[in-house]
Length: 436
Image 1 (cartoon, rainbow, N blue to C red):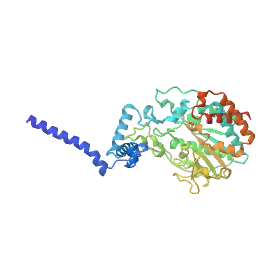
Image 2 (image 1 turned 180 degrees about the vertical axis):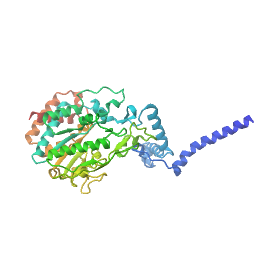
Image 3 (image 1 turned 45 degrees about the horizontal axis):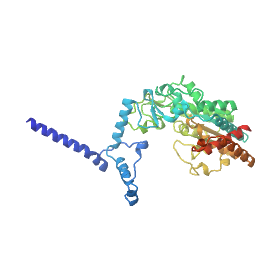
Image 4 (image 1 turned 135 degrees about the horizontal axis):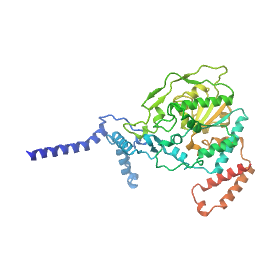
């Protein structure tokens, strides 16, 4: 009898093993169980492998076939979520190299942390030059009756520094790009709205968090406070009131993050995100109209923080004219809308007439997050500077002379490094204009 029971147990175990081997293949073929799709990089599926002579010669067919089968494995979605959930819950670790799990399970993106710690610093010469260029462009547009305002978006890593992992290095006090840029801007008299410093002040009095636990951008509360502050600054610059939004009733408080509030947690592909705190969504409506209100024609040039001013809070749609536009990263043109609607009249900034576009506006806002300070305002400032101050032949020759001098002072090893010529040219241009 004992031997019979052992044989039965072996058969059952064998059938279970066979079933475990067959089920993924059956699921891959027939999709008997519908699983929620993955997001982020995990969502990408490799194309079907093509067998041809060239693939056989360069040994890429097998690799393509393995990738194709791997991304279509049965129960792949659930297995990936199980792995990611265990890694997050047990070890407070992320499956993505671009995300960092902080204290209380708060999720951070890697490059804002590097910016806060001062690990991506720009040379002080370049910062002085870039600020001087921006100040000059500000003056050029002011002479045409168009205010230009630089808005520094807040950094989640800076705002919630106390929740960063304790093993990170100590920030280089006063040496981050944000600190050096804003100090130089204040010294040169640039029109600046520093929301990083305002978020620090609001943290002591705000009733709700200003960043979501699972997103890298300001949440609905932070976006609404920022939108109201920006509106007030624009009213001051234009000397006219704008239509405002106000809170209507109590906000919605939920454990389910909406939209951009989960732009980090959602791509982690877990079963349960274990939020550190709930999400808050203010109920907004039009404020009573005031005498003399008008909706100016706005050009907003900004990074992904711009979406919070349209999605969470319909700030741009409500306070500015319908012909206003968002130039996302100074590359793609979007309408002022609660969805990402590209401009049907032309969605590529490089194909537009820069002078006509800028000078047809009544105000220009440049919204930059700390991690994007290296971008020269997404190359908007150099383009406008060259538009209003084209280089003469004498300018070009003097820049070449400075560049040759800098090159001659460098070692042979330095001259062989990638990007050497570009760095020398940028340094020569900066030196020339700082001498003026």
